[in-house]
Image (cartoon, rainbow, N blue to C red; front, side):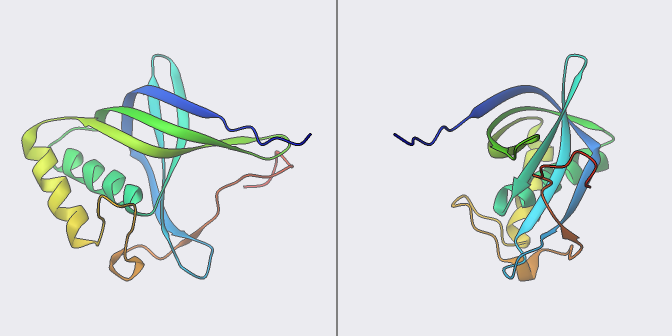
Length: 143
């Protein structure tokens, strides 16, 4: 009998705003994507966000940096996407623990880029068009 196993993760830590890289997925839809690190204790966890969640990650990171902060406290719920020898963490939900000033600025920026609470984002509003690929691969040396 074949069954499908699903794996998830929960990370409590700080989003490292300086680690943020943004672009679009290398697909015909050009879906917004963001890559960032979440620091939990001494560990740095690489995390990906897709669609409107990518716009939120970008918006909160920019708002924090404008306020002189390089980190934002977060709780990340994610799915683990695996190849034969590598697993990537893809965020499905992020709870932000920050000031109302940063929250307001981030929500305004995200809305202007077309992000919404239903997981959709209009890629035409996403200002970053560099093609990115989530590196789920069987070879460890591929980017």
